[in-house]
Image (tube, rainbow, N blue to C red; front, side, top):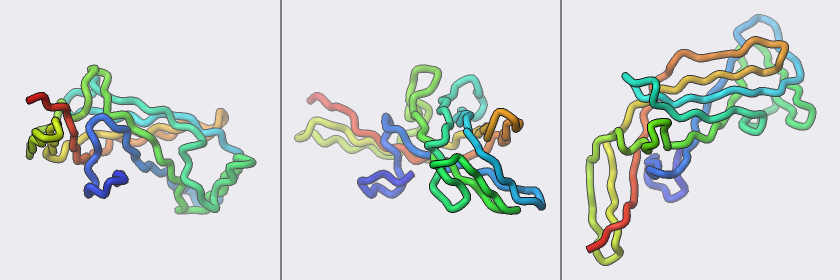
Length: 160
């Protein structure tokens, strides 16, 4: 997600960020039903899937579109149409550390007069697994683990 400060896609090290996930109607028929989606988005460290961050998915994460009526809960997806979810991801992992703990620093600037250090990091590749159940009557839809990169930056206190 692009932060408000226009920093080119870097995510502040302690700030939540957003990931957009989608589901596609792969059938030849139109899907139409009232849905109450629930599920999870897991962010995992490659090579150590026990270290992760889990976010819950709800109807409020659906990106508004003509396919979904948020007042009635009715979803109408024609063949090959997508429903998008914008999910808030937390950078704090189950290890107790934040994502930047696992990233390599690329630049450090000390602002001694303002008492902080600005750090940027090499892009960090993570895995995402998205699972959503549209209603109790339907089985859950789960993706394979998909890689994505995040650019991190942080401002840390400095004491001269």
